[in-house]
Length: 506
Image (tube, rainbow, N blue to C red; front, side, top):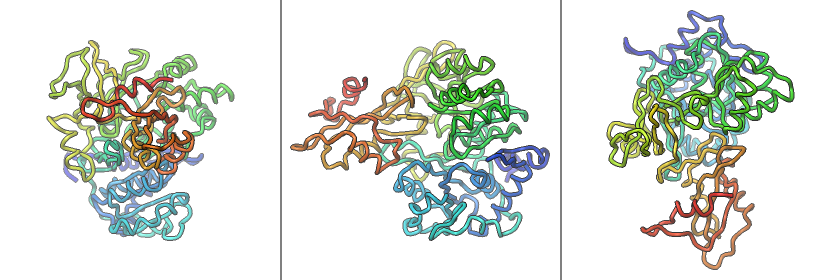
């Protein structure tokens, strides 16, 4: 660790030293102090080191939010290891891809996911051990065996520029790509949230987003940096969330539709007091945001633009300051809109959104060509379209054809991965997938398909379930429309714009 390095372990160690009795987080009614958190992290780091995990090695985890998940993040920061948090909502094959793609030394999993992961040793030769939280199924060792190596180890700290977490995102070619985020990037992202929300030691965050998501992890880390505490939930429960806000005087949280609406409904039903809230960020509908401002006039909903590749949010602003906009560039982030030659465009002109600054990720794991393409001409190319207005507010305008991302309830779904599965159906010859507005989830997946010659259109519900059994169920189409033939663009490929125009409404 260099003289100018400051890492996520530096934050944890500082909090333990100077605010040891203070609460780092609360889980299931039990408070965990900064001192306890750091002590458990040192002990787990010793166990990981004894299991052969060294600086730069990966440790994968498939689990619900739990204290041991947070301990793993802290222990990895102590060791200089890299965490691979896997989305437990994925199918077994998708989870296996995330693990094998990153060749971890060790894997940790909740009991319900262990059977689907038990055979990974055969596909991942470098995987030294599988450990189970709570209960260890066949092929897994108890998590507790990692805690028998002692109270600490002599492993070096990471450097600020080292990788800390690999989050799989952007399945542009049909398979997710692992974005490697650094200590420095996540710390910079945390400082931006601290700056916008004016976070301090008295703040209480509601941690209801999954810890495999950059927003869930990012909010927790920002609260650690600010010296505040987080109420961590295993899963989202709107009634429990409303009660926690009232009981613990929660001040901030991040959300994705339809979470906020469900919390407002639960608070109204139970008479829960939400007056402690002062800042919320996320993706939601104008109607829900208006309900929130009416119920909590003392609080602000913050809109923004971000992605895993920029460690969270690149822009942020209060929704009421410019309704519909995606915020203004954050404290440590430069954002521009460029034309097809990567020349910055003036206000009012639409182009691709590009980002640079310390929050930008280190690259796509083992995908050098994809990284070079994303980082061309000194910018990270997001694949998203937008424009700036005269006051510096960014307006999101969709995605480039190469990256037609769909976000139902905050999750990432890429047309290519859904189309790949649809084409496995024996009756379907071609498929085009895109996103449509959805009142409940913000966006929904829709597919337009042409059948093979002589094949009758299959039952729509059966096709939807066909997709849902092969990839994560949140990726399955909400509607499947069958047509005799797909319209063609000049080059012969399906004309996506014409298909969306014809079938994107209703």
